[in-house]
Length: 373
Image 1 (spheres, rainbow, N blue to C red):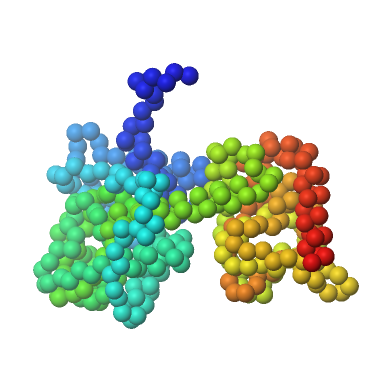
Image 2 (tube, one colour):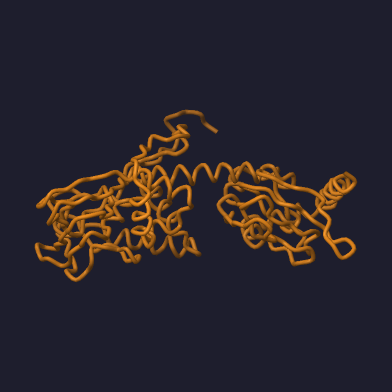
């Protein structure tokens, strides 16, 4: 292979931005079918592109500016400013600041509770984990407004999302008053994903207080968290002896297939004798592994963060050899479904099965030693 740098393939910046935006949308919405979602996403992206030489885009006056229940924001209207759906680039791998540059804006318990209540039905936030949601709430900053202040203007580039704490605000589309917010509500949440023109104008009627979140901060929280989780998942997968032979791209595909599950103290995760449907990695907490013996259960081991169980289910489909319970508080697990494993790495199952006897012998010897202890 030639090492001449002039012959290296250059990835266009526009392609990077398109794929980054698509990745964010997929992470936020987490659809059941990736291909269907991708087809729909890019069809909509193409349909929303402005026609060459024509900057006018019509809007439906009856559409609401607030997409709190998951509806898309209305299409953009005429504007003389150039618009782009591409947001600022952010590379989570290059960002090695674990603490992050995200500022924390203090809020009273009452303010925080109102924010949680206000955003609980926002589609973008429904898939956020508790840690991510706390980061988002911490990063929301205060904006005080006076009567007559314009919060957003129809046709302007969207950059911030707003939650109303106090004040009265009127919403206009094409200078026509369509609705009013009175001391509650939110608007502009799609600005957290896309640098799209505002679909309406929002103007303060009274003195008020807003909490705002900018797109770059939201993207940083979302993508940094997703990147760190993927790296953790890849390391967990690499700790399984029978998966060590995987190539990096294969391990990355498996990491994307992992699903987070949470169990409370004392809750049974798997039951001895049940059909095996996948394996588990421990993200947080401790589990107890127990086997039936003389009408009771005997604990044979405890597993903690970074360890795993149920791995033989990926290739043998045999009944569970032991039961596993959450202990010592809430346990957070990453689950790898057998069907997903076979769909992604089905071509490797025959190789794995040929080596399974040796692996089972190792597993049995470890269990015997633990029992003797």
